[in-house]
Length: 395
Picture 1 (spheres, rainbow, N blue to C red):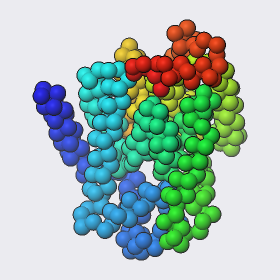
Picture 2 (cartoon, helix red, strand yellow):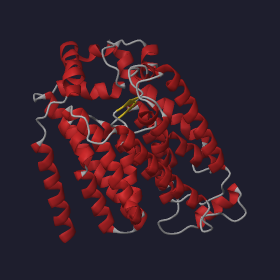
Picture 3 (cartoon, one colour):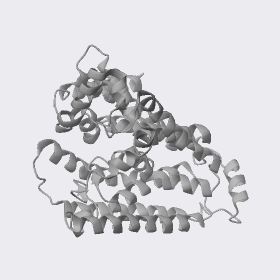
C-alpha cells in the first residue's frame, strides 16, 4: 500500500510541476509549430500535401488532430507529450525492475525520469516531442529483451518513421543480428513502417519522392554550425570553421569508427544479457553523437533515458547519469534563456568525452569478463547458453 501511495504522490507532483511551466512559449513554437498548425487549420488534411514542414509526417498527423480540438493548440500538444512522459517513466521503471529484481529501484527510476530537468523542459516548456520516438525505442528494447523479435523490430520501425535520430543506436541491432538474436528478415519492419508513416501525406497530395527524402532535407538544414549547443568534438576543434570539410570528414570518421567497433564486437563470443543490450544502446548513442556533425542539444534525450536504466542496474555508475544530465541541461538552458553558459562548450565536450570513455571501458570489460564469455565461442553454443540462462540476466 505504501508503494502505491508513494507512486501516486510522485505522479501528482510531476503533474503539478508540468502544469506550473506549461505557459512558457519557446521560440521553436513561435517560428515553426504554430505556423505549421496555422497551415493545417486553414487547409485541413489536404494541407499535408505542402512542403511547409520538415518533420516526419507522423508528427504532422498529430498536429492535424490537435487542430480539430476546441482547446489551445500548445496546451494540447504539451499535454499529449507530457502524458507520454508518464508512460515512458512507467516503462523505464518496469525495465529496471525486470533487470534488477528490485521494485524499489524501479520506483526510483520512475521518479527520477519524471523529475529529470531535461524531460520537464523538453515537453512541458519547450514544446518538443522527443518522448515519442524515445518511448517507441524503449518498448523496442523491452520487447527484444523478452525475445519478442518481431514486436521489438516493429517498434523500432515505428520510431524510425517518427525521427531520424533513431539511427544513432542502430548499430546495437547489428550486433544482435550478428549474435542471431534478431534475423535479417526482421529488418524489413523499418522500411515498411516508414512507408506506412508517409502514406497518409502521400494520399493528401505530397509527392512520394519528397516524402522519401524528407530526412535528407532535414540533414541539409543546419549548415551554419557544426554543433548546435551540443558538447561534442566540434566544440573542441572549432565549431564554425571548415564547415564543409569537417562535415565530410566527420561522417567518414564516425562510419569508420562504427565499422571497426562492430567488427570487433562481432568476433567476441559473449552472452547477450539484458544489461549488455542497455549498455550497447547507451554506448552507441554517445559514440555517434560525439562525432556526427550538426548535433542539437536535444539529441541525447534517448541516450539519457537508457543511461538512467543502466546506472540503476549498476548503481556505482549513477554519477555518470548525473553528469550526463547536467551536460544536456546546459544546452537546453542556453536555448530557452538565450544566455551563454558559464562554462564553455569546449570544456563540456571534454567531460562528455570522459563519459564516453568510461562507458566504452564498461563495454570492453563486459566483452572480456570470463563470466560472459561463451564456451566454444560458436553461435550454436550462444543459442544453447541463452536458452539455459535463467533469471533476469538472459536475453
